[in-house]
Length: 352
Ligand SMILES: Cc1ncc(COP(=O)(O)O)c(C=O)c1O
Image 1 (cartoon, rainbow, N blue to C red):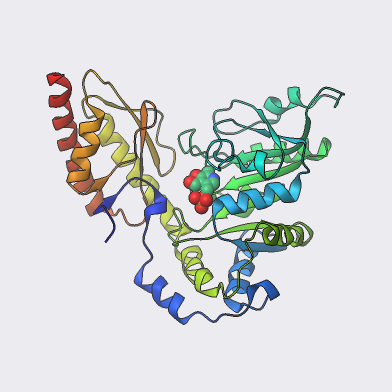
Image 2 (cartoon, helix red, strand yellow):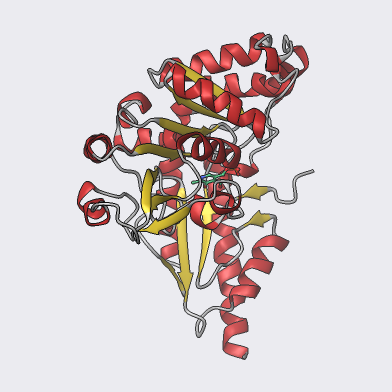
């Protein structure tokens, strides 16, 4: 039994549907290390097709997709141009440094790096300077409010990267959310990137898995890199099968997830003591609170006791996330529960 009746902690908390479980049980399998697993091959072909790329590689997670891409593009000692609030910088156990031997050139952004942001960091490499090797982007950008950015930025970045001999990666853990928000297909949104990593296990609703897409040459090297870090799999068709369903059904549901996130964001913003940190761009809602008006520990505990999971507060912010297992009925119930939790948390704050 999942811990919450209504799971708003993350879109990674979706559970596989009955159809996914049955597909896993029925999946045709083979030795994927030898390229013999037909279900994995189907999933990789579908991903390559959707992104209009030559090839794709199935990996276990977004973190694996990112580190395999990073290791494929860089050599130790190189630097990565990246927003310091990116997942790779903060939440992947420092793999870029430990496994990649890379440093970061942090560039603050509202969620997307522009060519103008990067240019000052691309002077001549001297005896003392860092040597940039890779431009790293994230779309949607999780910690920048789930903001989505469009193909114009991507085109500029790709041109700049090419002019300076840099590789360009998109951490597209939620790229289908971005595509729905911006209103363009994922292929157009990511054109010009050397690799895109996207997660099946977030809004798309699969229990695990990510894919890296790129040219046949890059994906061939990434396949060796995946093997190097122990990510090669055998009869992985059982893992790929729910991914095929997620890719078939997930993208079409994103607009509803975003509508519900905006709706819930509006409700939360109206509760005393709570305030949205930024507009709701996609399916992520970032909320802050006034500690004089609302005791956050009571708020989380009251929501939990009533079966609604809210993100653990980090600093002065917590996150609520919509996904396909939060329908209109769940949303309505969650709104009522959060209102009750806020009432209890106001009483606690007043009693302090
Ligand atoms: C932007 C972003 N990139 C990468 C990841 C890593 O994905 P995974 O949890 O599958 O390793 C996440 C996970 O939350 C993420 O939000």
